[in-house]
Length: 174
Image (tube, rainbow, N blue to C red; front, side):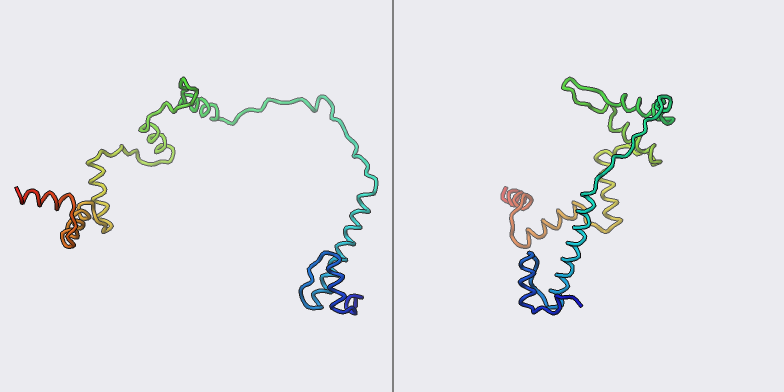
């Protein structure tokens, strides 16, 4: 049993506030907080005593000159070819910035070869539209034509004027 357990809560709180610690909680918590503070002060005193002890410098052993000889380190096989290929791909412009010397198609071909993918040519506008239409049909999405027809039907139903409805009115008047 510690001396703190015999003290009153008022005295415990005064002791805690003098030490700059929190004064919230029950008596058991206050006693525990004071005991922890005492334990941390004891370890700090032990550390201070150790720090005051004289420190001896470790002995430095110098290696013989034969042991300090440096050897040339060889690069792993294939790294020279990679380094050369990297320098060939980059060109320097007049402004000093580096620009890739390969076209986008060449980059795609190299990437496909590196990752083992089939080489695909860039799709033209018609091919891209056909690809989007097939994707929309496969996943049940609306195409841009379906969306345009929906917007036109909605505009007619609610009497909203759009380019198509204005064009139709002008043709009807003429």
